Length: 176
Image (spheres, rainbow, N blue to C red):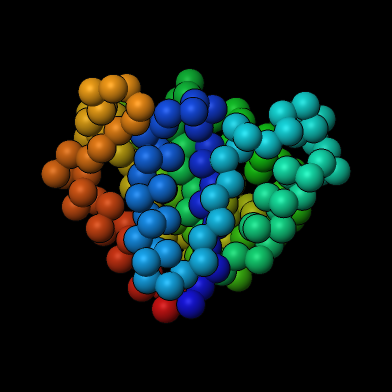
């Protein structure tokens, strides 16, 4: 079975994109894969902003990326690009950190034109980090998520459930 790392690039504690990667993580673990979650918002922010990798949280995250066979990376759109917190994490990854790995990129946003972020902003960075296989991934519109009544998170619309299945199958097809 494969070792997979999920990288959540949302600066928010309650996040649509993190909801999706948590869902994928549960499915992958049920299939016997090992999944390690990295939430960039939980890493040492001052160290990241200084480009340092000498803290425990960052070293742990870098080790998880290094050990993984595949990467799921998810980010909301902020200012027509992936988030700044994700950018600073990607900047501290060593060259070719994604070499030999399949990468599944996921972008979420409120407006259909934000879908361009996937192909024109995120995928080029993944290629620059040496990703061997960059899967098509998906752009998820915010309205496909249903906010829970208590405000603690999100669930999926029927359409998003289908997209989540497709994402799962696209990743497992290349890691099995």
